[in-house]
Length: 312
Image (cartoon, rainbow, N blue to C red; front, side, top):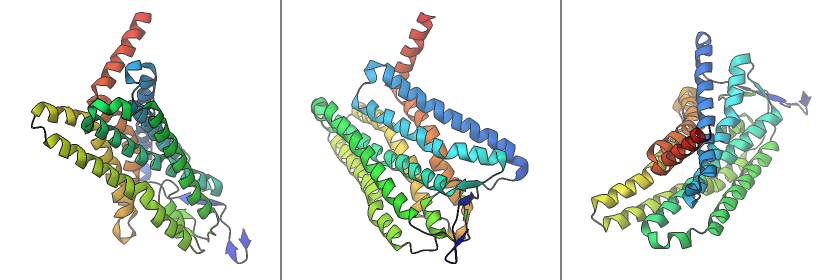
């Protein structure tokens, strides 16, 4: 549709993944399996935490929210990707694209905030073990969760509304398998200065500041354990923080590779791989990282399975 010599875009075309046509069915089966594993793994963690009273602690409250965020984060992109691969129709409506971008930002930013809260929880547990219960009170934990969710919802809404005011020209091809805000800004034919300014200013709120707070937490943890020259203490701290550190490295590693150091020469292959790592691989691996390295989660799974066998 033409309006004031400008083309009003009614839909976008997702470039998708650079997969040869003869391998489409193979990769479709692979991505479907990965998505099902992601859904099942994160659901198991959420259900275990709900059913086992021993896991009704701050750390597992945050972990259940992280699993829910991972589950939704992957669900925002994977069903559409699978549908596009099956139907070979890569179009997505304008409203659908903005909606997908909004929820991607919500659940992606939520994971960033949750990793900070979990780092603070580990800091209190290791540096102030005798005061852990009083510091990490149920009221404080609920306040943390409400603050994180409200902040991510408002932040994502701000960028979505700012993007909705832009005009888009003839080019409607997005070089990704989902609606990414940076890709959409490149397609806009109106002034994007305000959008880019808000991303620069507010970006620190959801990326730089959380990452810095995580580093500060672990610096304080390291300084605390260095005062105690005990192999047993070192082992306990590593077992307590190992899973969280693995998830932090995986999450921020892909974010940095995708947005801080994007591929040169406008090559989309690296960006697509990093986006796949961020939206598919990381949410799939997180349940395994926490379940395989966490003794409480393994015990909870055994208890639930034993109760099920007894009831049968």
